[in-house]
Image 1: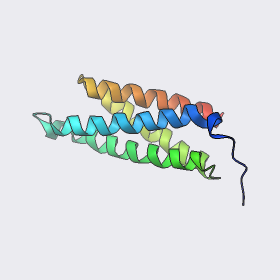
Image 2: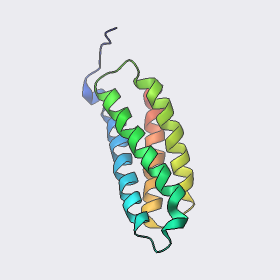
Image 3: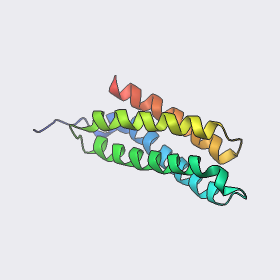
Length: 114
């Protein structure tokens, strides 16, 4: 089944949000691993990893115009919401930046889905 793909510029907003979320999650993971009490950050790290991976996968599906992009994106929204909630609990700058990136990503994905 061949799907006609819109020009990449039409998807640029969601692609940018997904890629910024990947970067914020990866940054948060690295910073959390350097925290003095890293064991308290395990939940955050695990969600960051899942969120970064699903956002990267979703960006690839959107970029190639996959017929499955919207299905993957719904999973992406769910993980971004969980990551946003977890990171928002922590006062560290990297966690707050990650929570903000997740929120922007959620909004961009919802807009893409219509």
